[in-house]
Image (tube, rainbow, N blue to C red):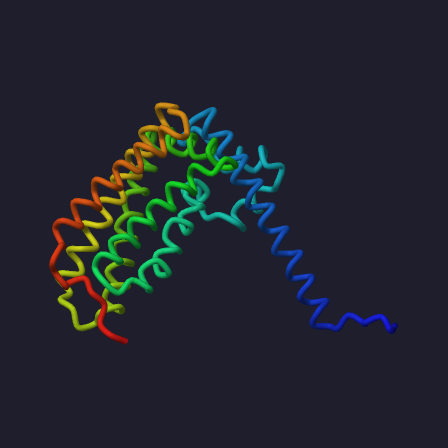
Length: 226
């Protein structure tokens, strides 16, 4: 049997893949080092130079991967918005839409409570709550999710009232963000994982059940036929 000869394309792909993995390992090393320092010293006391030393990389390497300390701290923010389009797209009725947005936030809770990430989640919550700088940077993330949800709803039903869609997005995101607030409070209190999950789920159930009652019998959230 003739052995296949690697093509130039195959070689380029393998090199690109290795570079990508190396880049991700470096980002993770910097992030892990930063969170160790944040846990020990608090956010404001830690410098980027100190993070670089802890991660055993040059300061310039930190700036290659992150723009600031805040960028490191919030480096997982995309994970907490990227699933929203896929959650909303299949929903055809208002009830399905409510369930989809609730499930999106429930998935965010599970990302935090993942066994491999729970320790970082506890550090995140504690450091966040202790830093006015971080709190001022965190609050706009909820507004970003609200804007994204509004645009997704507009694409889903372009003929619907923009005011109605904006109102629903504001209410739904408020319910979801309340669950995140409860989650952080329980993490700061060092509650067991199952207790943290229970209080966050209770907050989601309360918020979205109220929304379900508010929109029951209406069709303002239904998608337009494709």
